[in-house]
Length: 139
Image 1 (cartoon, one colour):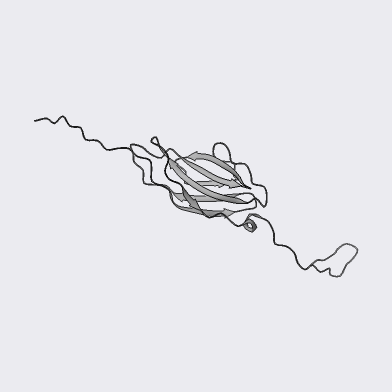
Image 2 (tube, rainbow, N blue to C red):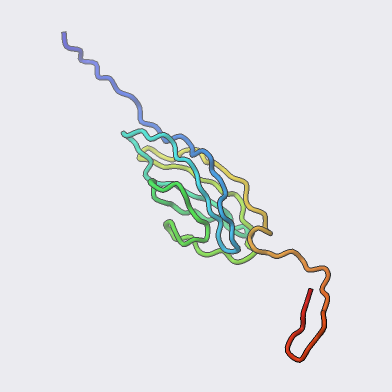
């Protein structure tokens, strides 16, 4: 006999990303990498939503689903990520994959320290060496 029952499985949002990690940090950029979730070919990851705060303002950028990296301040994504001002305070960094069903829960990474974004330490001692007509050595 032929069965009239169809077998189906429910499509779901993708699992969260794993290994969300800070990469190279410069005075005006913060690189991020992650491992994308296992793909369901019926509802593959189409993009990643990146959210982060710069000096207290929330930014949301969407990047291509085939890429597992993003640089805050590097100009990529939609809308493009603007360069960071030197010494910017970065906080609340998260990534979440999206597919045709919806968005996954966010994965978060601890933000870099302010000094790693280019704010130099305070100079506490400065000495002037032997001054000549063309040089003033400082140590």
